[in-house]
Length: 464
Ligand code: F0G
Image 1 (cartoon, rainbow, N blue to C red):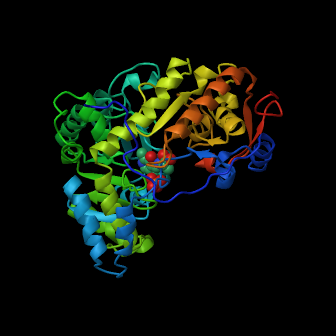
Image 2: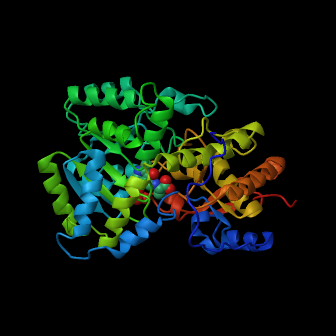
Image 3: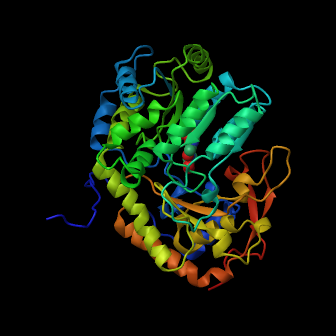
């Protein structure tokens, strides 16, 4: 008998209380945070879906590994366990630990980019884009056309546009030092990239002698989507699929705070000996010696174990289902979300849901503030606040106004998700009373983290 309920494939050994707040308390907290959810105290949040990065629950095996951490400055046993775990999956030659994904990006781009270069990607994540722009190079997003249509249900909306990839390489000789593919495509809605697309991108890059890198943060979730959606992969294990994905690239940047199932950590992995040497020298300058790279030995242990756990089929089945479970409820109730649901998050299409708020008044930001006020839920805007500010200081509305509800790994149970659904269905009833926001203060880049706002109408949600 095959039962159909997909249960959380774990039981809970340790619990962390979460705090209920009143509407008045949340109104005060939001005002004090200048209407920026990044500036809230986490204790004032009931369900925290700000990010799936570093927020997950570690397993008892990982905690046991932490006790085994070897804190030797050089050549620690923990490093070799970490290196073996990463190589088993990626088969890449040089494995450089970093304190998180963006450190891998900074080191890689610092060694490989020069002013005026162009780095194409399906969609750059904000830190990737910022690290490229910091080198005075261009971060070019070339997702496939269907990525721009949230309502279209297609299996691999994370794919990179292969024609544009080849075109940009041909049109800019000597100026494309690498191409990247982000799996899954976080800023494009957590959508997966097919094996066929990675393989074809790799062929194009090899033909033109351009190294291809994976931004591999959610490689395990991407492997699962390939298994269940791409012909020819149903009988392969997630690790076999991951191994094939990595076989098409010359390197990878990784935030182990996602599919490394750890609270901190990352790595840069690559095959080029000269580039690896330069990266290791940069690493020593700012992160640490190459066998710990800004991490404790115990972090390396947690990642080594977490990478394998992330590829467990029962875990991946539950993980992807817990996201689609909420997505199905929202879709059935007419709430516009990016479809089909991706791996780590639900992306609400705020432009469509709140058409009365113009993009200049940041509808996704306003919606995200409203979700906190109504239900104590913290989400994140992926729209014109995050992407609207151009490197020259001008403002250009983002292609989409999304609110991301990111699911920490192994953290919330189905009743938390049922509560979320209730909050969202209530917001659906009062959505016309949500008003926009304006920016009162903002830094020059990565402004969403610290910018300050005020509601255009004096309040985010009119009194209920
Ligand atoms: N690349 C992608 C696709 C990411 O999603 C992230 C982080 C990074 C790189 C940078 O990694 O945070 O370890 O430095 N994304 C988190 C998020 C922060 O909320 O999506 P990091």
